Length: 350
View 1 (cartoon, rainbow, N blue to C red):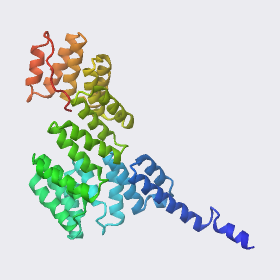
View 2: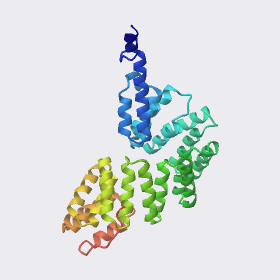
View 3: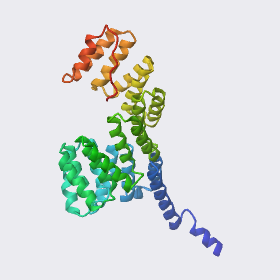
View 4: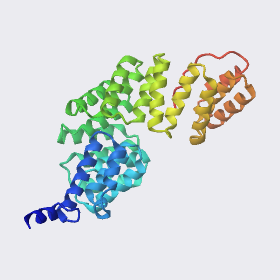
């Protein structure tokens, strides 16, 4: 009958229903990705069949989601798969190259730089790859040349403006860095990386109100980023708003429990609040994940001193000195003043 025929068309076993499920999963994944609901995005892709999960589109979506989560190894794997499946396309190569940059993988980044520019000289992505190659080698002026080439091909290519801004920051050219970040925001007001870049500059310039504003704008776009909340906490702490800083850092820790920087910054705030036992617990956790970070051992020594355990403080100071023998004036001064009252020092750097 006509009714039974219609029922068969919407049956889960029908090809049309299967296609609708696939398209709905892709739509939900992309919507979640744009909202920075990254776990939700990955869950939607995970509901696809094995064949669809290995497709170019699914691989690019998963790669971008892992990239935004800071999981660069996983991002690299998915984006490499997408490139192997469609080697003639340059889409996504800018993000893949930045994953290589974070992983400090010079060889695959250089290879990608050579092959991508052969694919197309008239799209911005290959020039982003080339710029990342030189950025990783600390050749900031050459990197800027290629990032500017990318944005000249597409003035609305926000990522090119943002990467150029970061290179200007590396050269301590903050005027041009601010200009680039503002160009990125003008092209896409939801480009949180540029809001973050401006916040980081104002933080370095000790313009804490401006830094807070820009970090909060970045968080408004990407509320799931523990890194952004950690930097907001650092700004609030620098402005002596310790309880606000504590709230921001605790929220960063909830989002990324394994983030050592959030734990470290949390410890500096707890020290300002004279909650030394809690600060020590947080620092010992950081030490377990970053055992060769001199600043962690140094701050552990300061906490031990506050708690009246000078022997433990000395052990931590000596360990910090062993790990960082070149820049040791602060550590040596702490050892020399072990039996004297503390002098306020900036220990927020990680």
